Length: 275
Length: 292
Image (cartoon, rainbow over all chains, first blue to last red; front, side, top):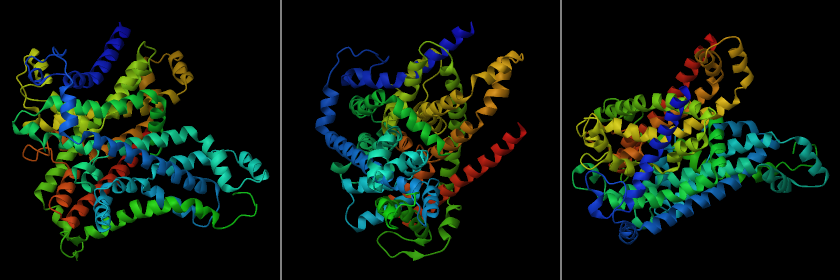
């Protein structure tokens, strides 16, 4: 009896989680006439690609996608590279300001991103870099979580391993590159996923730093989709194209997630550790 | 290196410099600069004028700011308990030896990878007053169509529903990890001593889950206080400012009215609230932990 109840809740969880995604998916294939049909139709009677072609031809959708992918991937590569270098120094090297510097960095975990937005805006406006991929990428490289996660991992690597390499004459860079990085692969994947996802979904900074349509990222582009908020202003919004756009923006993320599930989970658990 | 090998003093800095440049230029520097800007009156075109804490004083006399603050706290009141308790319950459910629990984990977490503005767009459609699927199904229960996003009373709960749907999987994962860290022997031992399932949960599982719970509550408080993108898409802060949140007010003041000093002051108030949440929670849970 209790088992039956548990299964009921299990199914309820699955259905509730999936229902909006499914509804978005089927709606994306409905012609205009069907989208506002009442009662709502789950299965499109005349499935069509027209919403997708509408989005791709009427909006800079391909360009937004390009901007999102490039900025997220480049930022991710930079972050892995510079964070792992710094983390290696913090975890394994002795220098005078080690502890002080590290605590300054960690203390920024508490400071919300919003306090940096106005200064960053002024900074990039001053050097005429608003509306560029550079403006989208650079600010995200000052990230703190990555250094924190990688430093704690590097600290856990046994010293014997490093000593052996030192005896073999390996220098610091060699140790970082050929011992630490391969060992840290799981942590690095987790940092990579956290960084990629936070840039991929980032909204406030791209909204502020980019005003030309061609330099928008997907989240900002999609937010402009209803031309502000016509959804509440009474005029019937174009839900068909909106669902097609939403679907196209969702598929890559869900696909990546399904392939790399365990790294997502690991990444989240590491975010949790930071407390 | 830690060994006493010939080491150059500058080597560590070689490793640190790329990151430190990024950190000080784009994270630390702007955070400090933001504070100084918050002490000025500055409308982007003119000169910045130092005004001390005037902006902060003004903020707490600004009815719209107070409204945004109240709205945000109301949003938290609607979401945090559901996200924490709901997340825990779902984690316990998918921790049971049930068929399909792996699928359930995947499905519950999946919305989390969808970007916030897409979440807004999807739910805008679901919540549509006349053609939305939610009102259609509620109709079967005899509920009259609700003007979800355009009524003052329902707009915030609607945003809250979408947000819980979107982020509950994140908390589920954290709780699940916490649950799986609890050694089974402890629960077994309690059961052998004659404890009921409820007693095992209350006296064994829950206390051992305290560290996880602290983290989950903290992250949930921090994240929900910064709610912005989905509101921006779903309601734009309306109707009649009913869903205006603090971050949105900061955005509007800074980048629509270009009151940079005022906007920065709001950002710093956000920061102070986050610090307060963390301190209060630490204190509260410490006491709770001591009693156990």
